[in-house]
Image 1 (spheres, rainbow, N blue to C red):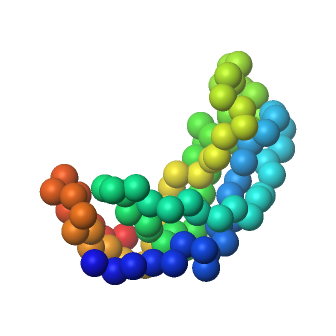
Image 2 (cartoon, one colour):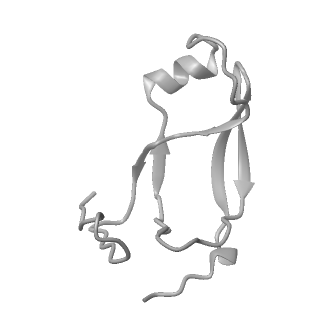
Length: 91
């Protein structure tokens, strides 16, 4: 098993605090729990649905603030061995 020092990572996060603007924040990852994996993401984008959310076009949002960006790329192929439900994937 590879041990990763998560304290050495700064993560840029697109956070929606209020409609109309995203805040780009630097955050530190927390320690991982059993069964979790840390994936180094190179780029992450917003889909049209999330852009509509930024501009308040998806209805009332009860969960502000929250983190956006789910379309990610990472150095691949990625191999994950911690869980039987996860399989080798390619970017």
